[in-house]
Image 1 (cartoon, protein in one colour):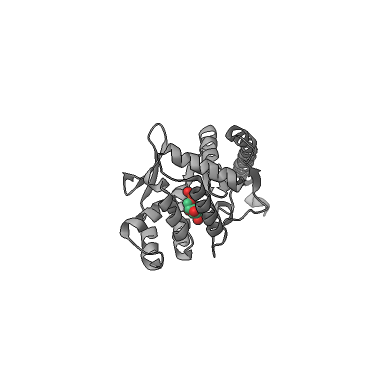
Image 2: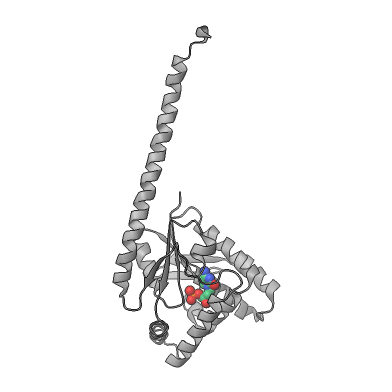
Length: 254
Ligand code: DC
């Protein structure tokens, strides 16, 4: 039985970093679904499609060939066998990613792709609709948040460290546009739900957030394992009892 942790939250809330740390410490496979939308955006840009070319974009989504591989140091994203890890971080790709993710038909394809990528694995998936649409029966659901200013600062620092030439004001404006777009979609919009644990990282370090969440996941994992062991034991006992019952059966008594 698979174990699924579903993490949702707005851009630059810290969910990506927290997800990777939790995956390393708990031995889970990371599924960064934002990267799947970013890969699709890259394909749209490469093909020069307009956002209204819904049929063409949905076809691209259907044919996406994405792999997440660890090169020993970091997680890399491969699209059609080529490393696009840096390219998909560009601000323009992020914007088109949010735009294509508003198309209902595209989301249907991406949901199928993400479920396929999770098959047979114990995963920690992060995005905007993990707990609401893609994995509604996830074992643990989380919503990770932070104030708009703190998120814009984090994203700005990230861009600067990658050598991307951008101002803080532009990062803040892009973030506000993306938040608004991500929260107002016909399908799969970012929502904070009651069944998800809410973690605000505005005044928290990554270490603090990881510790807080880790204990919850470990408790759930133990609980699920215990349940599995109990049901296996019960199944074994039932099968062992059957021959004993057959021995009691005496056809002459009938
Ligand atoms: O998490 P991110 O910033 O890498 O995501 C890029 C875009 O993809 C984001 O603006 C919204 C979209 N997205 C989505 O609609 N659903 C997801 N599950 C993940 C991302």
